[in-house]
Image 1 (tube, rainbow, N blue to C red):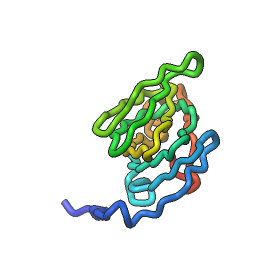
Image 2 (image 1 turned 120 degrees about the vertical axis):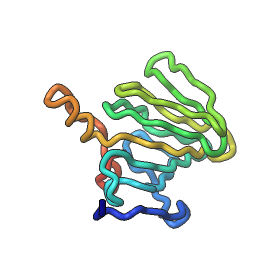
Image 3 (image 1 turned 90 degrees about the vertical axis):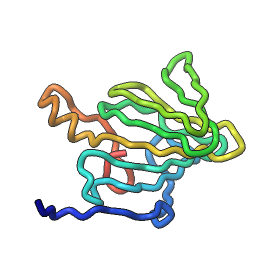
Length: 145
């Protein structure tokens, strides 16, 4: 029953904070907590901090993800035209299904901080065969985000 992979346990404060360099992001910091570099080939765990006046890109991709709000308040934009803005606060959870348009916005004084678990785009390509092409973008580390 031996496994070559080891369990990873670390404190999030040990992971460097980086600017989110994805096109369309403004005033967003990210910690790449767990991903392919750590042996996780199916999911990634990120911690995002959206500063006052900041926002993530208006995004749409095949892979789904889940969000848990740790601190602050923010808005979830769900459409491109006539945007529906849903209020989010500490303790809220969000499920973003495949191909759903979404953006996280902070119009408040305090930082808006959330965890995000994302499926690896490779899983969706493998499941759908040649029917689906992954349009998910990569972050500055070359990993899916």
